[in-house]
Length: 333
Ligand code: 10D
Ligand code: SF4
Image 1 (cartoon, rainbow, N blue to C red):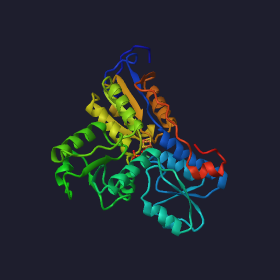
Image 2: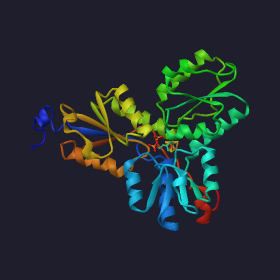
Image 3: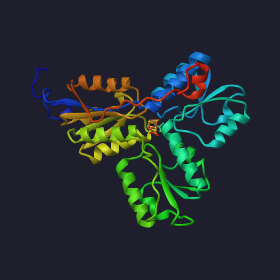
Image 4: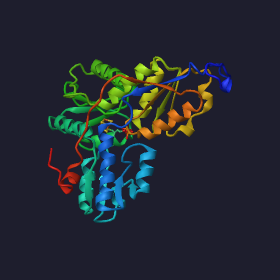
């Protein structure tokens, strides 16, 4: 088709010369995911297959499939791992009882829990030691929430968003603290905390933000991008909390429409009807090759011009899990 020619691609009237993509930055892998995926890859290289992984190492179907092809075996429960084998704990963290169980089964463990999740676990232990009731803002059933709750099950109450605040019961309203899952919507969490503070004016805050830098930065970037895009495509899996949040944030901040896809072939061409500007981003557990697949798919349909919108610079890196550093003879950091 001639440059600039109006066409009726799938019924919408947009000009090829106007069509463009806004690509959010930062997007994709965060430091915790990078470390966890690398931990499994290095374990496979160093110790050989199979390497067992308890739960999905990160919530991304492509990452899990790729590691499976290389010899990782994903299990739901520690007891499924044969005695003496190596098991990696996922980036989302585990309850202390899971460590105990693995020890009891004689397993060799590599803990790929993100250090920023571990930080929240430590905050929970500290508040519980001081006998606070801890209101953990998070999504019921999410692995990170299960792991954090396991640090102090008698002290932690789950608060699943602002509408759940009315259901909270504590022993002493003067002695209450809040913590959160690392991958929540920043704005919704602020709303939940405001409601909690109305009920508990002396509510203690966490010592530092629990919603991690990567979650915050990806939401900031999508807000900036969504303001100028009619359609936003978020690459990520349906069980990835941070990816799902990006879809919500895009819709709340200017996009007419936003969808989550694992792969480019899940994009419905009808979404492009009448769309000039498509925003693209990806969750913290998503390899950039999948975003490149989406960009290629869009380019084939006239959306070849790509402008990257960088809202925050990211430089975070985490050292590998200590069990690997020890075996690889890397000096402790
Ligand atoms: O569901 P989610 O956003 O918590 O996890 P995902 O694996 O998609 O992204 C990485 C986030 C982690 C490991 C939680 F800190
Ligand atoms: Fe760590 Fe945040 Fe990434 Fe989760 S999203 S793995 S807390 S850096």
